[in-house]
Image (cartoon, rainbow, N blue to C red; front, side, top):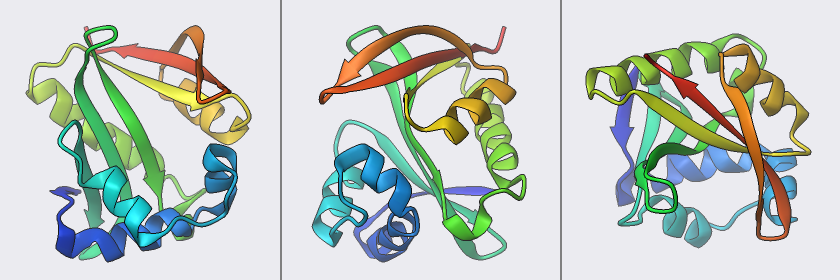
Length: 152
């Protein structure tokens, strides 16, 4: 599993992955698709580390990672998304566990994630990986369920 930083040249691959998930896009922003410019703004930003997940020369996912959220001083996964062709086949678990190993090697001792409350599949996914609920927050008028996983 390779985590390749997203660059301008990789925006088309990120665009394809994001738009392969219209149900998530509807939950997040009320629109089934995102424009190239929206994808560019989200993943070419100075605040987070954004990666394309590469498996056997194919980009299968995106991880957006914030090393230190200034609101709580914890590391956060801002987005974890697989191309829809890879849903339901254990790739999500493999990708996350590989990313977690990299976090441990970089001496992070935990990570947090927020999941939109209406995203039932994602809620179950993160719980299955050992993430523990610690509270709800409101983000852009939507309830976000917050989880944390300790590596200690």
